[in-house]
Amino acid sequence: MDDNILEIRKLSAGYRSSASPLSGGGEARTVIKDIDLDIRRDEFFGLLGESGCGKTTLAKAILGQLPYTGSIRLDGRECGHRRRGEYYASVQAVFQDPLSALDPRRTVGFTVEEPLAVHRRLTKKERLMKVDEMLEKVGLDPSYKKRLPAELSGGQRQRVCIAAALMLEPKLLVADEAISSLDVSVGAQILKLFQELHEQMEFALLFISHNLDVVYYLCSRVALMQQGKIVESGDIESVYANPQHAYTRQLLSCSPS
Image (cartoon, rainbow, N blue to C red; front, side):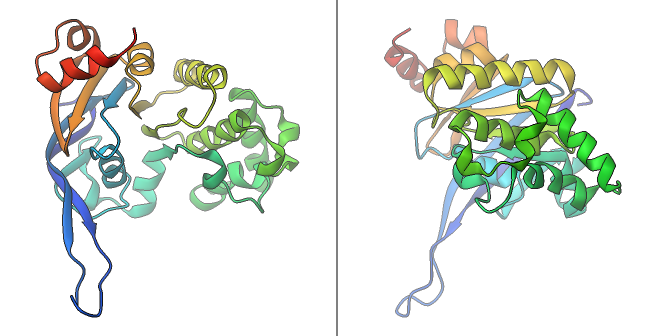
């Protein structure tokens, strides 16, 4: 449909274990199976589930980091039919641990500028102007360009990762447990930052988490994943108020709020 930015049909993906001298080729293991999922343009969509249920595997398939069977369509076009550079410019990610996501030898300015240097034909001056603008959007002074990741707090590092992810103005941002490594107050600031950036820029957000309260606060729709399958999805108010699947009811009963 025209109002969907992402359409997933019958998606299955997994991993192949390392080959051993005795077994020969590595053994294939399917982690997610027959996933159907739609994300609308500019919406914040939550993906909930316990650790190991396949949330990150789904994210990697969407990001083009895993082979898969089935269909992933971004903005109406099959992802496999796009040039890799074009696809990576349209889908970006923010990961759980900002320290491991950043090159410790590279300055903030280099990290935020690099997507433009690779994908856009701009002069150095034009790129630096855009870097300054983006740093201000994520709440960092342009003077941070000269700093290394080790000189930043956890929240500041995640702001740098968000800035780099949004430099190419992607249509879809995948945030995989983006606040779980931060303390509560800093995590709340990052959630508010996502909302503020959404008011300034047009992008859809797939927010992956195990925290029901955070997803309820941030997202308009939600899907629940169990053992590699989507077991329930819909409007977040309806799902939380009247869960239809036993797994959803179990998760909600465990939530302190």
